[in-house]
Image 1 (tube, rainbow, N blue to C red):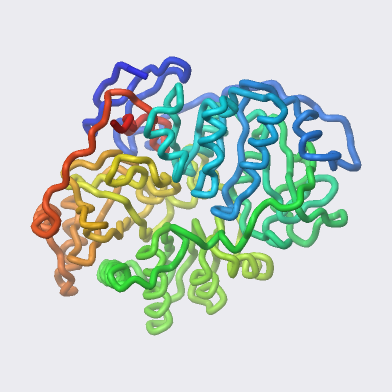
Image 2: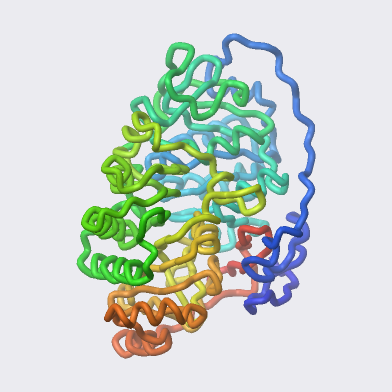
Length: 521
């Protein structure tokens, strides 16, 4: 689709109008709308009042779809707490194909490698539009190849919650995988054979979707107890299926802790920088994002806090077993869990009252009255590429193909007092520090440091951090010096060839457009 564009404040060409999607505002800085003066008015939609019921269990998933009123042209959503173990998205899409429903807008909280079926559904016309945080596998190749008629919309986790609450993302039917659910729709992710932990994304979808179908493979006696993630008053129907997925695949890909020596070296340096910053002290708050080095930093943090008898305040975000261990050992007072990254977390959340389940709006929506990321001290995040302006790309690979997720990256980087990006200096011989990243997800203004195994680059905005790192004996380098050192080994790679066609929009957490994704030639 050929679209007229303007430059936003970081020099990216972005559209102000996209036929079929509407008008957009260019990105004007990470805090341009966060000074307390910006106002927005929720878009109102009619809500159908259901009849009283003492049993919401449908005869089948197909019958539930029929009773929901879902029709061609509507929007459906899913949560991704099952990560690469999810099977519900594909079950529902194949069912819609069978029922003759077409032209669906798919709006999951994210998509993983297990969702290659979506590409097939695009080819068959079942899915024609996509709103998501993550795009990988066949779906990424389909988007980058221009298979969608209108650009896909990429949002951060906090931005998606904001969009749902303001009404710019309106969900007609939410299909929510429910590891344990009773006949009236109370459900949780903390028990059952497919337990996946927190239901932080599902909570927001359940609250705002026109119609909510809880899909479970574990129908329990009423009432579900002792923990309810999504209560019955938000659920219209319950559908029982053989399986909603494989929980053994939750801790896979970006959620797996690394054993790679290069990545462990990066984690060691990142921890050294955090320690040098002086922020690991009593009352500190902490988050690591996905990716091997980022998760490995938690190990070093844990050992340091035990050695120095430091007691932190809280950890947030994607919660791992390391964080659950730190809570149990008294290193942190509480965990706020919007997404659980491994099965060990499920036991902790079910049995420890200080391991608290929170919805994604509470976690990162910049337009509510106090999201958790705004009080965050330290966040460690992964990246696919970074550039000399400290901009971060977590969406597109070196070949220009979509293969990542926005996630909570820009949300936490903007909110944290110290944001650290961990990244190997090269992947498969291709340098990871570029003159200009292909897709900006997190603006450089919100990034304090980039840590590679060959050295640490610190944003010139943080002279205080640079001095602390040098005083600690860490290998601090100018980012251009670091880039040049890497390119002496790898050479300068050829640029990927793109057409002018825009195949995706990257919406910043505040609703403005920070970048576009172009069709790969």
